[in-house]
Image (cartoon, rainbow, N blue to C red; front, top):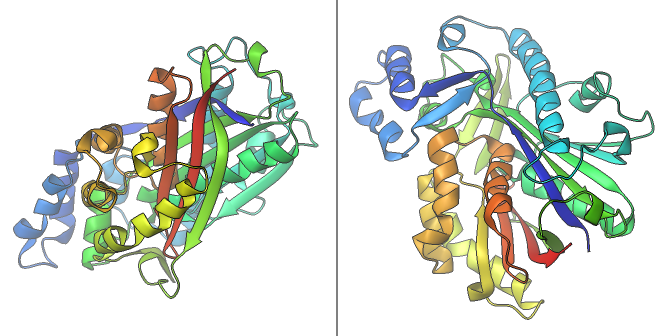
Length: 364
């Protein structure tokens, strides 16, 4: 079956402590909320310690048109995307040799935080030595679920084309959607939570001579994927598109939805493969937030140790939308060596929807 071979991440330029962002939020929102001190507790409650942004805080203190924000998105997404791809294709923690860009058969690009036509993958291909015949599959609008979804589609591509090498690049610049004059609680929560990041994954089909590529004794191999849409849940999360740009929609009911909806969604999926939830050794979850991870634990009757890696990624990076689950996967790739262990890559997104990828570590 197709396997995940390498992961590369790129942290944007500006690293900031949560304390610095709290001071910024107080400066921006104190005139709009009479109980600002109480509301700012959401920054501490989320347990995020640091985040990375495409611009420094002084940039966000100034007014910017949607045009300016989107130009910044295009410029930074291209820059960070190039770096993530280069790190992935020459990552000496995972690879015996550099994989050249012209060896890549298909390029999946995932994002939801800016617009570009031609898409960002074209701009990246014009900077690196990709073949002009590389198939391009840009996917927009899946939000936090986009990383898991793009990975699933890439693995399915390699199942259909077993000699293929495929990359999945996710780039999200959530900070560039910040609305200075949006005094909704959704915007305040988004300001406490979201961050920027880029990550790339290399996937290869079973006939792609993985043995000559991989340094690792065992790799996560594709077993199955499942996409699920909860009917009539469009208002749970997403964007409101207005004259000034993208306004975050973020329902307070997300943790409750997870607790009631996720287990009946996952159990039949793993049961098809003769598995139970207890057989999932590695729960590679997109950390939407601290409350989301706690809802995973409650819904799946799961010990907190199984979401510890996701929580650590959240603490160190915040929620980078689709990118975040790739940061979590990168850490599992570095430490899991045991053949036969089962992993579940999971993410939730707008719709309201879930994306699940079931993998098993196998000898190369």
